[in-house]
Image 1 (cartoon, rainbow, N blue to C red):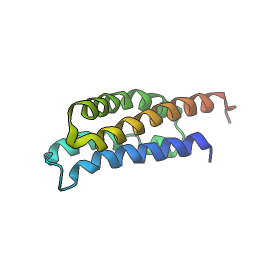
Image 2 (cartoon, rainbow, N blue to C red):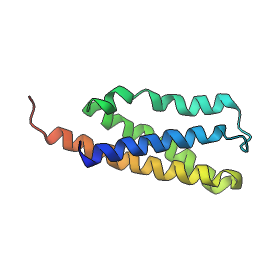
Image 3 (cartoon, one colour):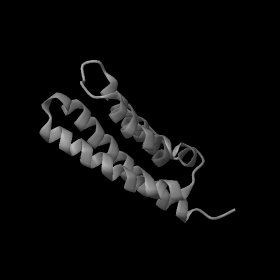
Image 4 (cartoon, rainbow, N blue to C red):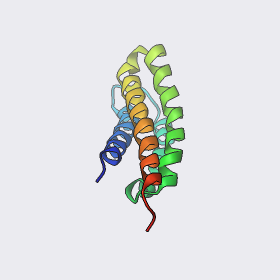
Length: 111
């Protein structure tokens, strides 16, 4: 397994964990917002596991939404700074790892 694929999967799991962190009892966030934030992350599971280059290309764009959410929560909401920091770091790592892994997959010879 390639290092960039491992980094993509771990950062994807980290981003999903950050979204599920909102379910922590100390956070006063409604459950439907957590479901709305975490559900799009479940869509690319098959493509990430089976090395579909197209999935690695578009998940990079999907992470930009989470990056914006993370930055806004990091700056604006002191109660959710841990969530904001985790979301920002995870989405940045997922963006970089997925884009470079998609490029790596594109350079591989076709069978």
